[in-house]
Image 1 (cartoon, rainbow, N blue to C red):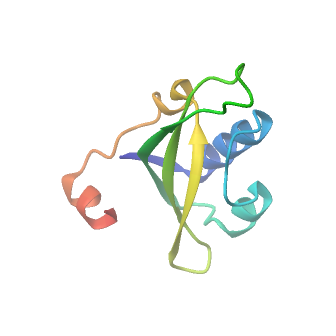
Image 2 (cartoon, rainbow, N blue to C red):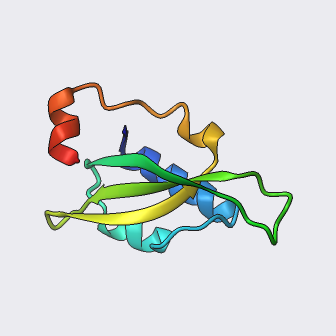
Length: 101
């Protein structure tokens, strides 16, 4: 499981949008509703490829748990390229991982 701050989440959402990869929530909605100082979590679910776009590499479909401004969290699906996902930091605390999952 990876952990990111809001600024990293917004950059990732913009990258996904620029590449026309799949995302379930509109990036503007994510920016408007995500807690500015929130902690958000990503974990892999499956590999995805676009057969109608052979020039787009395989992506990793991620479940994304977004911490909201108005308390609570929402789950989103987001396709990211492995090169964009790999450098993100891992959850380092077992306690945090258990609490989120």
